[in-house]
Length: 633
Image (cartoon, rainbow, N blue to C red; front, side):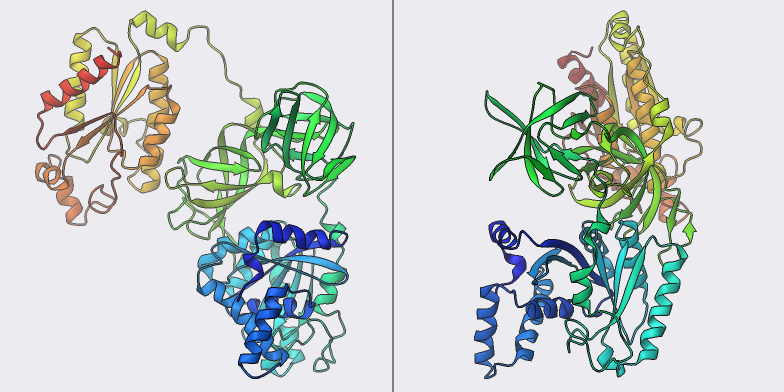
């Protein structure tokens, strides 16, 4: 059976255009597993009588096969089809379903209730105007109820419809309904930013109080679920009139036309209106508002447009066109709330990619200030964030980006975090505010530059980054390499793993978090050494690809020379000069690389030596030859 979520974009566009004069309400259904989300959505689609022809035809066919024309079977088939999507893995992220009534059109984000799919629920809530939170009347308020409520609140969905479902299974008890509502009210009052919520007793399966009032709940006098969805004030969700257009691409089909395309994130723009470009600060006026269906006099939120301007201004993807009277800000350091979505924890100091609106940049999170217990709302200490944990931490970017705080504008303040190695989305974040130090600290330009210092030394600075297991021979090779370079008259310095931990990094241990911070500090120091014009040699296990790539990103083009000192684990362990492997095997030394902590081998190092078959002299000669061939010495 075909499903609404399988429609291609053209079908959706055609459907929405038929009902374009109606208000659009976006909502999400959420709650714990088996609270009845699929049944509720099936009921709404079925009762709306606005299903697509393929749904109706399929239902009629299946009903005839079953020898009945009953509405109950039709609904059951529809609900089974919606649930089957999840079972078949179709709902990998969020299924968006479309339906309409005489008064309004709707987009509902259908997400699974399992805890491991919390990220899917957060994705759906990020664009919702209202949340329908289902509670099984037999179960009451559960942990996942609280978690979803907290995320809904955090993501700025301030209106909740509490659907106390399966009332038919508790004999439509008013006492059970009131107790469930009281329990939820107590939780909301503690700290959640939910302006208001309405509670409705329903049975999604039987249809009680979904579209029509139920005679089985005479004690309930409020609206039905559909009545509330049709009448809730959409203007209450307005994020203000400040115009924001994140530029997605520069449209230049011919020399006479240069437009800037994107989707309006907020506010309204009119032809002739004055705009400011962020972050450059340039100002101009709008020449034309171009769309697929022709030019417009004005455009507003959610519309896809192309703006042409009356002045030639340098604008590129990631810039934001704003109203000149109320522009957004730009910064590279923020406090943010982060929901972590990966099995691998968030590592403070590790570099990730960040995407906000049309901007992609590099983000480095600091140690969390705290994480939040979604059950008690207690603020707890944290060094990392694990799957589905929510925390507050400072973040720094590699350049300034345009932004609004999330509580002011969800599009301009919400971002996703992407792993640089796997390209997986691992987290989402909400900007609270710019850090004051971001605007108070400026880069001081020096007259004596790295180039001048290198010329004085008659050499080309580089970072020779040796990585490998403990006992592979890194320190021995580094020592002999520096001797040979020094003998040639080169100006060098060696940063050794053990030596650094006696001073700069004496406060760090050997957990994954501390290893990340260890390499971050060494990379920053190495950058300073290169600025001094030195050939810098480092000797660190540096077990993670992400941190080695972070170090590479800090250096100039071609300055990072990765040298993999390869040795099979059994060979390195047989040497065990410091007795570390023996202690690790005995359980006396935790987080030891190669034993109970991973080592990620370089995928394509500039130089690779194998000390199980190559001597130290041969390894050093190999590195020296490479440096000469590439004009470093």
